Image 1: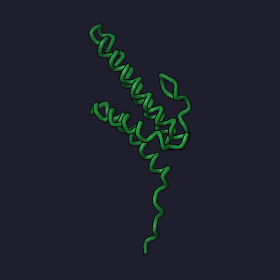
Image 2: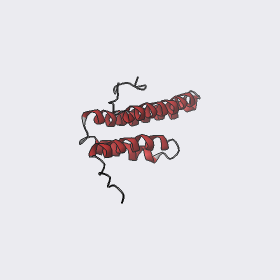
Image 3: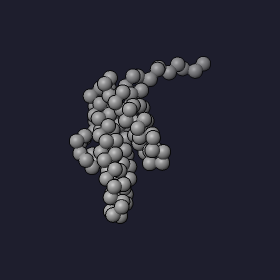
Image 4: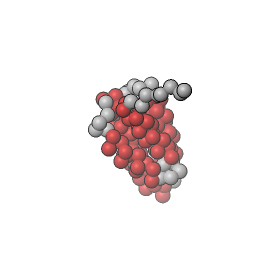
Length: 121
């Protein structure tokens, strides 16, 4: 007889949603539309989340919009060849933000510095 496992808590489900959003952002490096899906999910799930998890959703929303700004600047400046450096910066920036965010999410900690334009400490 197998023991019956309790259903996952709502908090665990919310955590998995935030983790999926980070993964969608990383996948957007290959398939661009997944970033849009991720930001929509962050807007939808942030209202019902506890405060520590809401900081992750806010961080993810800011990551999308700031990243979009970096990409647009990079594309505009690519005419002058400087844009390729901006796009390379954006690539590294996005990966670092997602990895740091996932690490804090795994430890069930809020994002330490939501307002930063770089990555949390």
